[in-house]
Amino acid sequence: MRIQIESPCSKNWNNMTFNDQGRFCDSCQKTVIDFRNLSDNEIIEYIKITNAKTCGNLSQSQLNRVLAKPISRTKRLFSVLGSLLISLGIINQAKAESNSTDISITNQQFVNNSESITSTDSVRIVKGTVVDETDETPLPGAFVTIIGTNITIQTDLNGFFSLYIPSNISLRSMIEFKSLGYQTRRIRLSKLIKSEKKTIKIKLDAQMLGEIALVD
Image 1 (cartoon, rainbow, N blue to C red):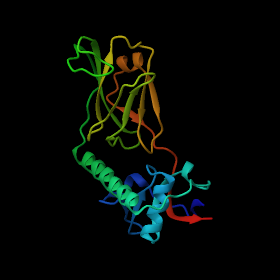
Image 2: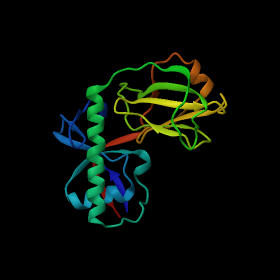
Image 3: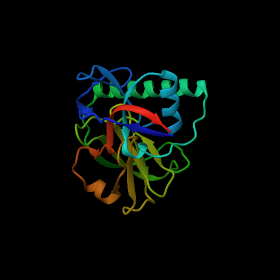
Image 4: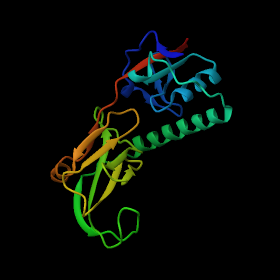
């Protein structure tokens, strides 16, 4: 079983209007669902349960390949749909509340205990905002990770992050920025500290819009 888009749409996803189910296309008067964040099983279940023609936004890697064997569980579908709606709601709120934030570096004593940072560690704090490269829309829920460690945080509703860097972390370490549906970006810590850029811009993964179909 494979997913196909027989007639790709040429409309610009970023110019479509947000709604509670995805983005609304003024041209075809339909809601376009963003499937890029879903697994094969979740997409198959959504299509089968809704039993209707669906316009979607998928990454190129999701198309024209053999899909994983679906697991038919109604409860799982409701969970998927709920997660999708929550995700879209977060993005809508972020769109409305977006504010730009400069990246800034400070030194301070970290006073909270964690597995990675003790209460006596001297740390740097790297602050910034992760946004879409095209229209600079803040990206809530993006992952910011110090490669080679278990230190990972997520951006807030405005795409803002505040990453604590323990003193034992080398300036040559890589900081990874990752968001579903986007290309992963890595920046060396030393470069990030010196950077005067206000935001971290990441690119959308290659995508295709159109009416989707399941084929054997």
